[in-house]
Length: 72
Image 1: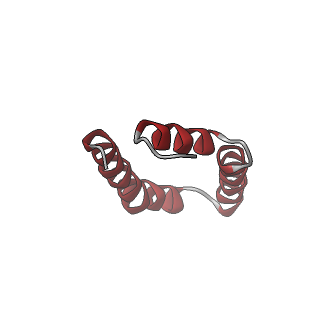
Image 2 (image 1 turned 120 degrees about the vertical axis):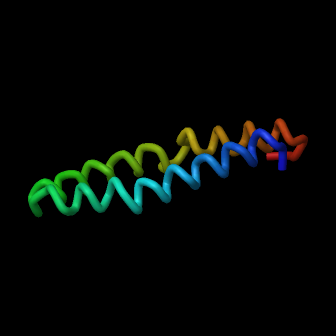
């Protein structure tokens, strides 16, 4: 793996762990059930947009493969 991609991977994983450990717990403690449900719905909608067919994730994966000299 390219060093830059490895650095990106490590940084993204650190960020995700911090969200799960601190930010999400803070939100759970301070938001009522209706607000949590609303945020969950919004998060699912955002995930579907990002992870849906033809999404940015697919294009990013293809660009990384191309940069690494691998076929689609």
